[in-house]
Amino acid sequence: MGDPKKPRRSFDTPAHPWQGERIKAEHELVRIYGLKNKREFWKAQTMLRNLRGQSRELQARLRAGEGQASIETEKLLGKCARMGLLPMDGATLDDVLALNEEKILDRRLQTLVCSKGLANTHKQARQMIVHGHVFMDGRRVTVPGYIVKRGEESSIEYNPTSPFTDDLHPMRNQGDNGHRTAPVAEPEPPVEEKVEEAQPVQEE
Image (cartoon, rainbow, N blue to C red; front, side, top):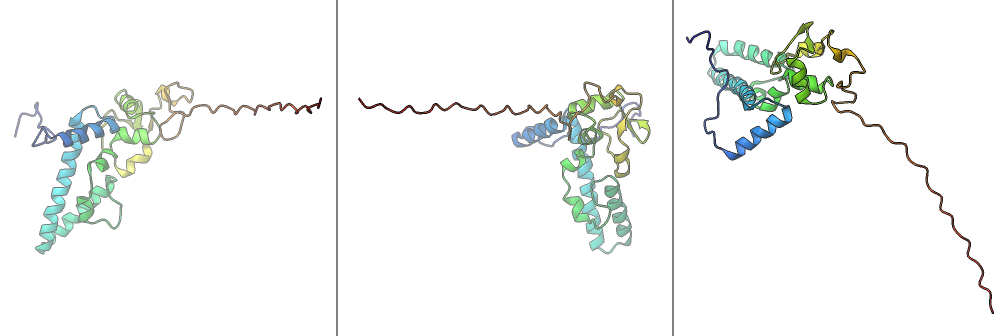
């Protein structure tokens, strides 16, 4: 047990830090999801690794005929379903093994704020959350990496005291799917070309 003032690190770093393909893939996901740094990606990766490890362990225990394993399997699948990672019914331990990092990142509050159209970009969504402009279940949440449960997703909204509640706010999303819509220019009327009639050639 360590010092409570110095909590343990909540993520695992890569075992081989200088792998070009992995570094490139991490940078791409950091850019797509608007993450602050790769630590946030490593947290999602560690969460996924723990879920996969539990699934593999339970599969081995089920093959051995352990009764307690079936109870723990239902709890694990129920947990993943409540997190929105798996469907509510019909999921198996193989579905847990098929999860990837994107599934975890899609459940972050920052990602859902952007996908629900409350922000234009993931960067803006992060700023709005940190500054207290987002409410969930009637309370303010200021952690962009909060994993939103399935039952909480529908309650994500603007803070009632936030200026973003004004439809005319200049930074508020005015388009669909987090993109502003540009005004469509009216088509110009077609230009009628004057065709000169051919003059008859006079014979000399």
